[in-house]
Amino acid sequence: QVQLVESGGGSVQAGGSLRLSCAASGYTIRSKCMAWFRQAPGKEREGVAVIYTSSSSTSYTDFVKGRFTISQDNANNTVYLQMNSLKPEDTAMYYCAAYFGDWWCPLLLGNPDAMDYWGKGTLVTISS
Image (cartoon, rainbow, N blue to C red):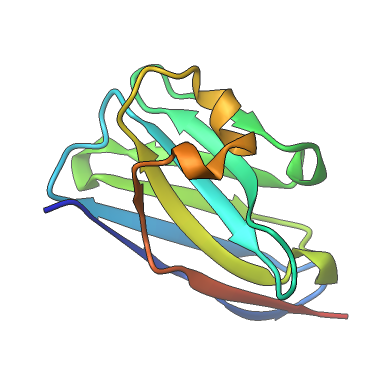
């Protein structure tokens, strides 16, 4: 049974940092697209970052480029999202998701409905 469990969310002040973790079980993260999405209250879910775990190739949406870094740890079957220089507009529920198909990974950032598995999310709150 595939499971994704996020952790690491919390409340920090603007300019601070957080590192989110996504622990996968029931499958190996190798050769998959693993992504982070977020959803703020009253807004649609939006893609944040994606990694193709076979090559460690990454892609980011414009609003996090230079601030967020997605990475993988194959030994622990875990994907991370390092978030620096956080802003109040980064406040959202952050979700980890996995894709097992053949799409080019960056395309998934604009297509959350294509993801195959989702975690339950971890809340990130940034105060000004």
